Amino acid sequence: MKHKFKWTILYCLALVLFTVYVMLDTFVISSGGSDASKMNTSMFEGMETGSSAATPSSSDSSRKKPSGSGSKPSGSHSDKKPGESGDRRGSGGPFKNEDSSKTESILGDGNYSDYSDDNIKIKISEYTENGTKIHVADVTLSSAVYLKTALANDSYGKNITAATSEIAKDKNAILAINGDYYGARESGYVIRNGVIYRDTGSNDTDVLCIYADGHFEITDSSKKTASELLSENVWQAFSFGPALLEDGELTSGSEDTKGRLTSSNPRTAIGIIDDLHYVFLVSDGRTDESEGLTIKELAEFMKKLGARTAYNLDGGGSSTMYYQGEIVNTPTTSGRDVSERKVSDIVYIGY
Image (cartoon, rainbow, N blue to C red; front, side, top):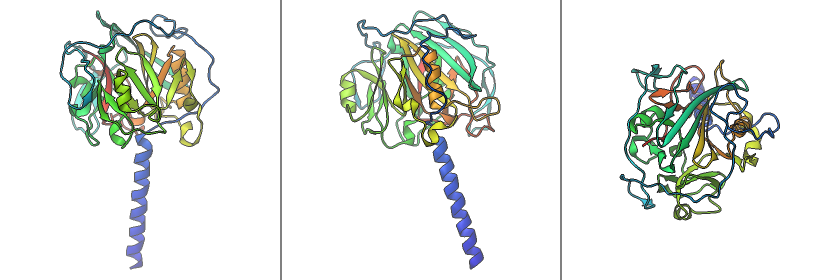
């Protein structure tokens, strides 16, 4: 009887430890590092690789709403619709998706050509800072209609997930990063392409609002309801965070150094430099080749890139950048296996 009771205790302890591990890896909101940099350099200025410098600034020019044709899922939504057309290119080396026995030609080799057409311009650059490999996409658009989001399997729900690359390929995305993994939480606004999917707020979470004209603002659910945001032409709303930069300066959330907020992890972030000029960032981490970034290091790097407003999305094993048919970074959860975590949603550039 004592022997049986002993094994029961050991089994329960193992189950608790495994559950804690999974919960810790699901979200990686962290902070730490040295004092905030006071640099206000323009995009990629002074770095070895990157695009031409662009001076960050705020603009009061008239805002344009996305327009075009296409269908949208049912639910609360605005009357604006994005366009629906285009073709893509891409090739690469071997990459093994998580939970898949098939090997696909999708992991890139680091040599990425610029993408340019009449509406979309993208340049991919790679950096090494704080012992971490950082992948940056400099994106300029003619209209915010080309900045979109997509849900796994085109469906909203807690347990509906797919790899970032799979969702991106399904949408013929030129560029994509993972979103906020809304499905792992019960609260936090979810607005996607002008549709409210969840209007339950989370008072301790920063909300990134991307408006129909393409500009970014940070808010929280104590200030505005999801319906109010939609009435103000919010086209996308993410609930993860924290906010990294506002008006070009580090936020209190990015400066926080309490508890787990000092850890280094793979990260995903999005920022705006100027009207319709964006920066998408994914850093690798948890490997011998790439340590990962703290939230503060992430915020400081986004500031160096010239971002005025920047926001932290889901990280860890979720952190993935996809570009022209290839995985740009090295997604990993444990540091041992190269694999994408399946997620609820992505942010992408496309038609």
